[in-house]
Image (tube, rainbow, N blue to C red; front, side, top):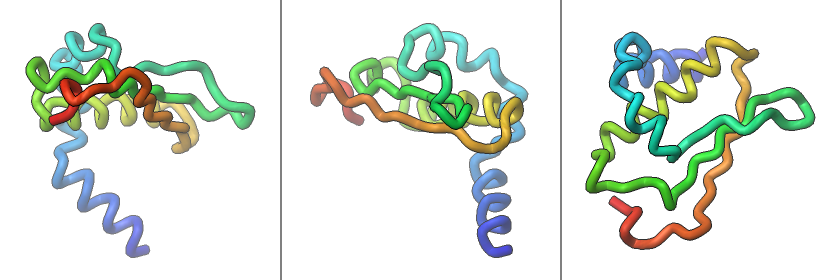
Length: 99
């Protein structure tokens, strides 16, 4: 029960429902290619790859990037059974990519 309450509090604190309504906000970031869906694993869970080398803090703020990743995950979670695999790819990441 506590975990469910914590999830609901987190969703409210991050305005998840509002983020889902404003998908036009994330077109540029989606085209930038920082995060993309790459098929599914052997259990059928979709795989989200987040590429650290494609993060550019001079283009997108930390807050904007967080909202984008919430949008990316939540739009997929509405289509599947609440499970996804997230891979953080740090290959070719440099100090330039860090906030």
